Length: 265
Image (cartoon, rainbow, N blue to C red; front, side, top):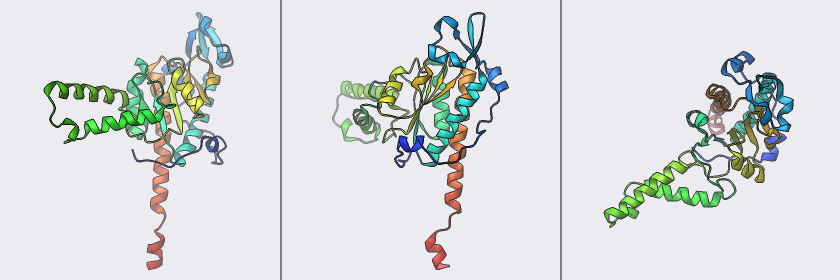
């Protein structure tokens, strides 16, 4: 993906872009059908999540889907502002239920992703990660001098290194700078990613279940983070917004006449 302009997170938070009051197209019924309202057992409820719990059923928290839609709408407005400023978004979902959805949807909108184990320092020690990615690029380059005059054993070791680095970095190997926001599925599982993002003041959008502290995220979306259908529904909506805003920006840039051509005309 091509390198984009730097976006200041503080500018994003105080953006003057007009906000669409109903950006999301999914409904409460869609969320209900996906099982988005089912939280964890009530004994595991995070104290800061209680405001999002509307009731309990058979000892299970029932999440208020009005809060889910409100949280999603705020997140979509914020993401829209980032994309309008040519910002980059990093999607993170390493749990089994999320990884396929995250990879497919991030690829669909041309953004970055992490679906394997989160490597400590991916954000806070990004300079080292970039060196590792540079090494991967050199190993992937056909005809590289690295492979010259090597024994079969040495070639085997280099191939193993390439496979390992490729697995670790495949979703971020073209990421040349820190993302302007991070979208996370399951704040509990991705606690290290959240810590790193908070340390660097990178805004966090997160699908949070009832066992997770929503205050750790800038834009919490309360919902069942163990349901593949729920994850698909919400992440798909985020990606649709990214694609829609990107397309509008492309259309605008194409409609602006070249000044040189105007003068010539």
